Image 1 (cartoon, rainbow, N blue to C red):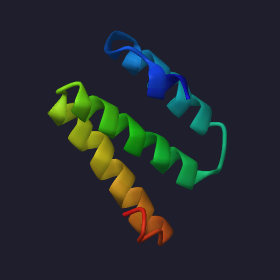
Image 2 (tube, rainbow, N blue to C red; image 1 turned 45 degrees about the vertical axis):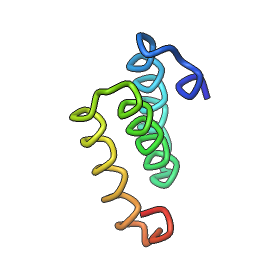
Image 3 (cartoon, helix red, strand yellow; image 1 turned 90 degrees about the vertical axis):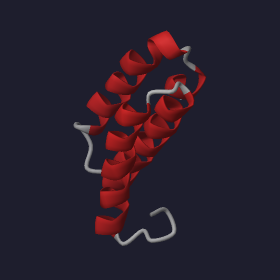
Length: 71
């Protein structure tokens, strides 16, 4: 949630914390959703190359989970 409201300068730290949390869980869907939101925030911050990495990773995860609506 903090990543959604974070200032651009705080974006990396907020999402790094969220993604670190996901390494301690088995919920691949939530991790993919976090990467999707991170990619969206990065794109809005004009960090398109960084955004592409996160968005592609999220897409691959959603496809792997069979979550075609999210893909």
